[in-house]
Length: 95
Image 1 (cartoon, helix red, strand yellow):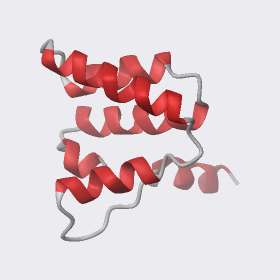
Image 2 (spheres, rainbow, N blue to C red):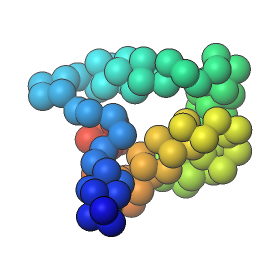
Image 3 (cartoon, rainbow, N blue to C red):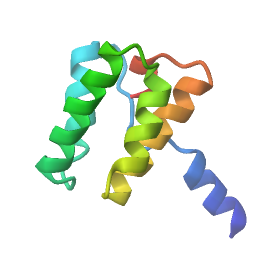
């Protein structure tokens, strides 16, 4: 039973498709957030933009925004992206 839970945790939350452009991956990323309220998505995009313009690394920005979101599913996705970036994946690969 424990192995099943570990396998689920290690699986990516967002399934990558081969030969996708960055724009397509971002579209898929936002579509995967269908259950996330629009207000949360707007908060994320505005604040991510501000953080990146301020020179904050992607990983730190995603971690901070994951801590600030009220939606647990969205927070989980943002944490996964941040962890993937910390492991050396590019933003595109982590999506």
